[in-house]
Amino acid sequence: MRVLSIVHGRNAHSGIFRTAIEEAGHTLDERSFALGEEPEDPRGYDALIVLGGAMNVHEEDEHPWIPTERKLIEDALEARIPLLGICLGSQLLASVAGADVYRVDEPEIGWYEVETTPEAADDPLLGRMPPRFTAYQWHSYASSVPPGAVALGRSPACLQAFRLEDFAWGTQFHCEVTQEICESWIDAYETDPDAVALGFDQRAARERVAAEIGRWNELGRRLAGGLLDVAATRAGAGVTARA
Image (cartoon, rainbow, N blue to C red):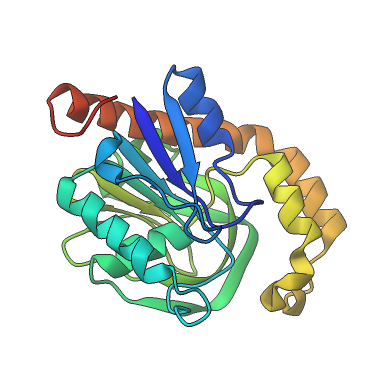
């Protein structure tokens, strides 16, 4: 199978998802509107991943490619391509589906507890996660539940996961990050005014990542595996395109 991953920065790539997808014998292509790398038609892929980024959904003046990316997500939804949006990707998916994207009262930067909802128990992706888990986060915005979607996870701050119909998911937490990705964000924390305002501690952040990342990458593999299983089922039924 072929998976398309939309990235928004050179230090915000597919991480553990690439490893899981390629180890399963599939192909992952990374493309970026933000970096001027126009992707192919998503209908030529079996699944779509839309990753996070430092920008926000409403910043179209600063990032004029955002409407084009929204159109790609709309096309993928219309074609019912299995889709996973993460952080910014989740907010873009939610916005396209009619939800509100808003600034949270307190940004989540670091490790935070997530609790799944009862509806997550038999979900193809979130059902692979523990009922409670500690998740890596880096965001100042979140979304409401899109109309017709199902909430699958929450933290005290905001919605953490949802499913739209039976083929599209959004997660606010960063289930794709590797230690290398986390450390690159930690190195650049001063570019985020909210991290500075929270008194971000680089040394403590690095120690926590080193302690948590192995467990977290295993959960990331589980989510990637769930998306691949959904894509394989739909591709086998002739629902999505295959290479």
